[in-house]
Length: 527
Image (tube, rainbow, N blue to C red; front, side, top):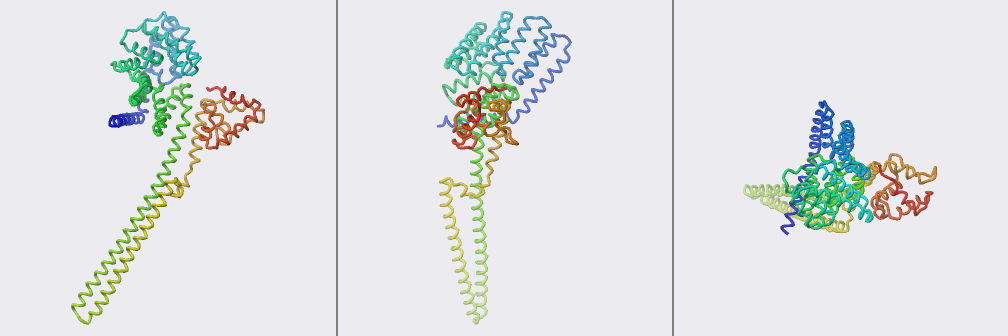
């Protein structure tokens, strides 16, 4: 129990560090832009083509994990300059850089085409190793993207052969050798050897933040599969911190972390991190990551909104209880104050009666009368005090029983009438608007291609002020890979029968056969 608590404390501490890094992410991006500004100034001072090539190469290195369109631009400029220099080695190197950029954006076919046009025999051992490593990554990423056993069995061995070719060019114990060896162990399922390899790699001195983040993610996956789980979480968090501090936008650590935290029901952190992952993917221009993140972003957002609604209900309930308790305390204090004040008056009457008795025997009857009156006052007010207390105690007991009964039966609206004023529909509409924006960034032609499945004049219109209609959203979720009617119903706030009705009505309206309609929806391509 102590070790579990200690591990949880360590994870919480790292999450706090990650949140602190996120709070300063704009500062890190500003530093990155300042670095790029200096590189641009150096480029302006270049006087020869070789100096220009060096300047463009420096800018490519600065942009390659920061922004796709800029890294692509400078990679193309390097191709132009290398052609002007007529240097075969520089031409091949420029092609390598362009291939790296294309791979980072998810353009696998184009990456392999660029690599196939490179004469690797021009490279020295280090560059040739980089060539085979990049080619292996292309096959592995393509295999992961297809997620089909047929293509997996085809692409993975091709990637392994490239890794073996790269390993033969590197000295054992070096960073590149260990990185290649770890990736090979990871792809072949040799997790025991891979764990030792990555541990040795991460102990090497002089690792850049990006190098640490990439390889920490790989080791984190091994721990996720084989345990211990807390080490997997710790490595992912540290990798995400390194990515943020180095202003790296082409990253997977924070996305994987959000997915794990969501499965652990840590919705607050999962929501913050998945939003950051989408921001990074959008900023960089990594289309395949945007699609992958979009598959779980609406689900996490829906859970987050549901949690916020639950917290609001609890807050209003607790506020109501506390308000009642404060009012009760104030009332009791006022009653006690009044009782004490009247008791003081009674004491003064008794004192006056005693003085009158001493001064004059004749006033004895008056004094007795005053005393009798005072005693009557005491008795009446003491009775009144206890009566009031008993009434409030009974009310509190009744309130406690009623509140316990309502809370135990989850009838929160009876416990606090103001909860009825919660505008939950606004939160749901905001969720729809966010989903529409994200979805249409990925599938900008979805509405047009969807309406092309109907006869002219039979198209499905979009409600005014909205990006997508209900019918569009149902089939948008199906296009995103959510085919379960129950899941769709929960996300859109409808019953399962309503979803069935919508789908059947749309399919019957289309000129496409019903059993082919969803296949045509799935065939709509992203940007």
